[in-house]
Length: 380
Image 1 (tube, one colour):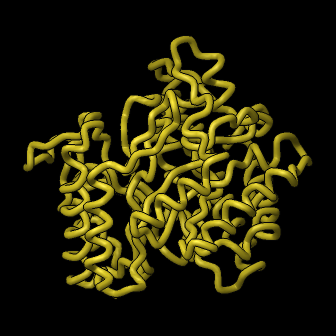
Image 2 (cartoon, helix red, strand yellow; image 1 turned 90 degrees about the vertical axis):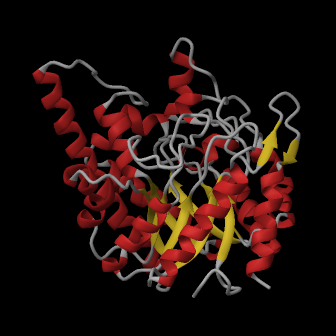
């Protein structure tokens, strides 16, 4: 299948914590409140209440798919406590996508944990994969009939780096550079890697028990680094730990290492722009013999000067990979809306749609219409 066939999926994405606002029961919310100088997510874009408006915008911009996440801490705010009102909310969300004809890519874990899970040791606790499996079973049972694609985990290796190694994201741990601390951090990262792998395999099995034909994968961030150890860590390691538990590969790609910037273009966050890297990554995944979806690809560009060409060039990169045999079936731009970019706060602007954070007004940027024109042209 090529991008010029009608079944190729085009869309954009977002995550619950970055867009919904008011996620008071998770560890990020608690961390923001406890960290001096940290920008608070607060209402975010208020997508929780405005999802119909946002999905209508996506539909009007030609999108045929949308990626979102379900906030675990809304569903299970306390141990053994299921919030049926929040489950009903997400049922409304997914029903609206289905009504509009947008395929859903549903992420079950996008960096945030219920506070009580973190207090029990988070992803270092051997019991957390079981807790995640119980949550997955609940979602599959209550909402699975409305899910088209399942993403169990978003960028688990990023989580390992930011939480386990750097101690930069909640739950924050020791950052000391002493040999003892380095050993402790290494041990912590390896333990968390094992817990994430177990969680994904359990979730994969549970979803398939409910829906034997389900499409289940992860969204992994890939790099074009040539350093063997770094390439293994980012691109290969998690798949080796979860062999046989993937129906597709989700590719998140933003930029190459900083020393690889032949176009001399950078986003607002300083990230180099190198679309050829996406072709390289897509072709490197051929040995998995699985369908591929680009589940994140975007840039911070508050003036919208680079985004239109960024989209053009990265979609060309997908076509080049397809021409050489890569089985790529969809492209989801990051993101539909400007949103809360974790420890960077609200300053980076990734959205196809600009959000006025004072009024919460939505306004599609010119690049959103360029993307729409590309979609319409590709679909005849």
